[in-house]
Length: 266
Image 1 (cartoon, rainbow, N blue to C red):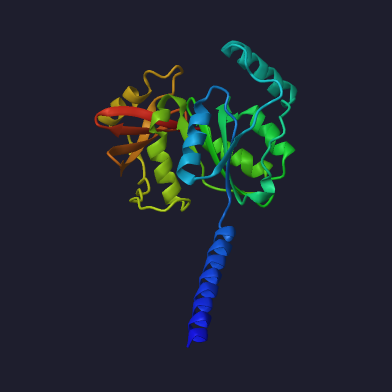
Image 2 (image 1 turned 90 degrees about the horizontal axis):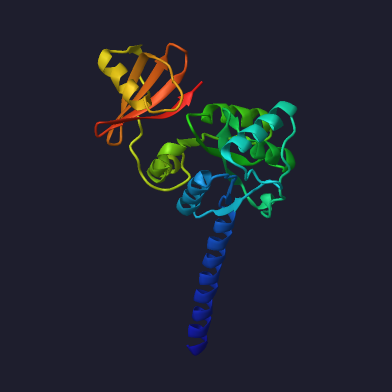
């Protein structure tokens, strides 16, 4: 009888060890995620750290060997010179072993309507083939669509996924938006109510045109004149999709009587 109990106890231990091994094996098969980003002013870094916090992912900032540390005007001049000459800045080698990761959240600011030059250098210097790339960017007015298209063209052997973008002026809204983005795209567990698609646009009423003017009047550059619009309900308010006479698409949130534009697609 004593031998029976000893054998039974050993059997229970072996079953427990097998279950533990299976759990570890399943965990090993889960996607490994890296948040890899460039940030000049700290804005993109704040967004990257929020992605890292919500995903529980690894994170690394990449940089250039000669940082853009001059004045705003000096940075603009340097960037314009580099773009016109076609010379990209040299990148400091990253520390992460990209072979370990299945999914890379790739963060960067938008410069002159395009992904920043350091990002363009990075994708030329590392192998991202076979990786699922989730772009996220910060910008003054817009650039997510253009950046996603540029990455799709530059990385034909990678899988470019839906991305997230936020204006630098409203980066405080990023945590809540990132939560919805991650859940909606199944990178994080949770439930959110899906937003409806925008219906067909119609000519702007005077009231809708005034919402557009309120949202864009304090921006440093003119954003055009609203001509057509559609709207949908979002958390806490309404989102408008305006098309201007200049053929740009501008998104505006109206929440609690406060109208602010969230991005421009050109």
